Image 1 (cartoon, rainbow over the protein chains, first blue to last red):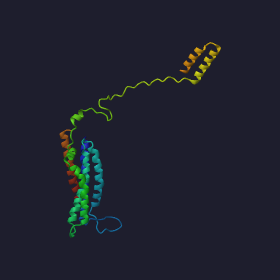
Image 2 (cartoon, rainbow over the protein chains, first blue to last red):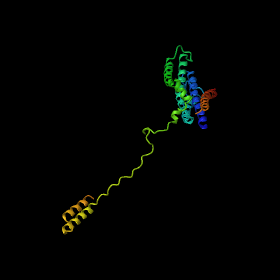
Image 3 (cartoon, chains in turn cyan, green):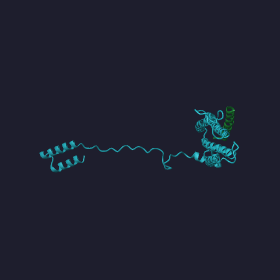
Image 4 (tube, helix red, strand yellow):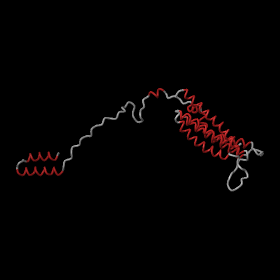
Length: 222
Length: 33
């Protein structure tokens, strides 16, 4: 449980660090016009601010790794704290959408009027981040995650009944019946031998017709 | 799960978010100067 507690703290902090780096990195790039480049065979007219590419790439992949770790560690806390990982999506798109709006309506290079391309992106990001947020804004949903309810005592006292077993029926397996014994199949050759012997006895007069018929019937009936 | 544990988890989650923001800003400012 301690590992789940500490792991959840560190991994959630890692997710937040990643989101923070993306938010700040995007702002620093938008302050210089919205695009930059480093490395490669050409000299870029607009180099990136120091360390920003590394922090943004690290924020993306580090944040994803920490998100997975948070899902893992939070499963040890009980409740459904892992659902909070779903808030990373609105946090990402709403924070970046805020940047688009801020710099779109107030461009840093003193351009007149809004930059409609950025405003459009801001609206798109607000939509993408805001719609999933509606689930978390419902108080019962959010409180169910942040303050997990106790199990209903009435439900806890109910014995576990496997699905598909009618209530009241015994969970014990039915008693095994011994397999029905089938009469042994008569050997055809043996029946033929017996009939031949009976016929010989009948021919020799040892058996009269009535006795022969009775004996033959007994042999044929097994 | 008792109320004390719920409260501890809630405080931990809020502290993790706050710590992540503070640490993230500090690292960003340190790296970018």
